[in-house]
Image (cartoon, rainbow, N blue to C red; front, side, top):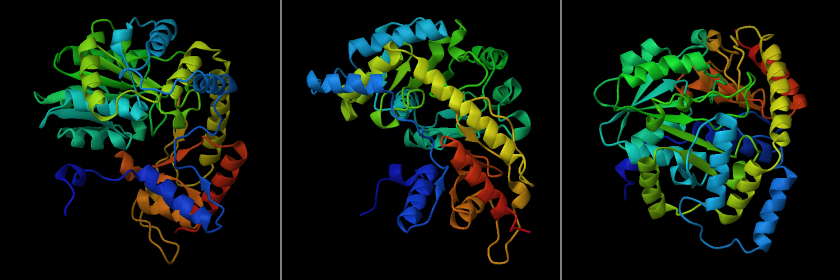
Length: 396
């Protein structure tokens, strides 16, 4: 029997596929350095783990309210006020099973069949797939390395049509690490204000991993606030990827819609994880700064090493923990046995010959680039870049 047309429209996650292939090689005894998955290599801070242990002991083992415990939603409200200068109420917060579900909830709640959703490219691999799942149409805006991978107001204006329902904006960005400044966001906001039916899904999951200072949110502009859905969570900032807690902060009508949707297919997120997330938001934030400093050091290291590799064009990312070099100068080259036709070929070549797992840019809408995660140790970064340099030197 065939699968549904809905599923047949979707592509598998390239990042997870490369991670799986890397795992298979490791199982065969191959020493692979995995730079394919965006996951902090730090452990969850002790005070957060302690809160989870207390939650188990205090029998937080039953269903939570669908949008999350009131205490967690209030903690998020306080975080948005203190850190971002944004005022929300608990009724405008909905917690989900990771920020990925939060994004998908928003897309499914807002997009009808035939609606267009603007997605700047490079993009996170799941954005267009979620739009397709909602029977919408992804509309891509190319933002090449020459633009530091950021779209311009003129590009946004040109992409908007009467069918446009939403813009998905990720800053700091996965896969590029680019960060929009306040002035750049102001320019995009001015365009959006001329098109009152367009919503903004602002994916800010990498908010705390930035190297420019204060995070800038497009929700800061009061006249646009009622059309912005902020997506965030604890996965990246607190090294809590497996705990699966994300949230949206949005107009109450959007939250009610997402609550209705979530109530039918997952209900509330894990009760123990919610108590851990509450401790993350209400406890000391020194752990966040310590990890941010480590990521910044690693960023500086990988950028300097990548710039020593002939044929790679490298920008200086301002956030997240990814490098997205342009590698198209290698297309058409060969080592005598294999020809590199695209970035997916290049990523597979680096994995199978150099034993470094990366992800081809085709999956991110930028086939001339490939993605490396530097959420790993300094030693791993040095060794990975040595292998990449030697492996690419075989191509001519």
